[in-house]
Image (cartoon, rainbow, N blue to C red; front, top):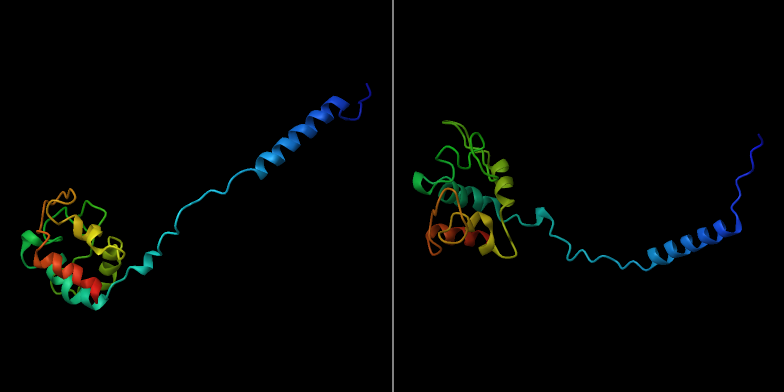
Length: 153
């Protein structure tokens, strides 16, 4: 049996042309999707690291008072046994604090456009956002003030 060459009949050719035209018009008529403002570069919110080492770490994250510490209790924010997204490396006795790694962990939870809205502030601050560790300090406390001063450096 001889095969016939595959040729479109007049009707098939007409429908193919119409389908192609509809496709071209449809694609040309698609509106551009507005993705909104370009999100800020994560590296942009990096307040003074010296202030982090001198003030934020010793008085805000790892103060001597265990009730105010983010890293004193097991299951909080230590990288070894923490249960949240925010984790920092806590040195063993005699070891130095890994400020570089800890600073990088902290800046992820900052909002330089609105420091008062930073999760690093709103989670432990009383009455703002649910925090599994409970309310750590009031909004008008020295801790909150020290945190906000960090952005003025």
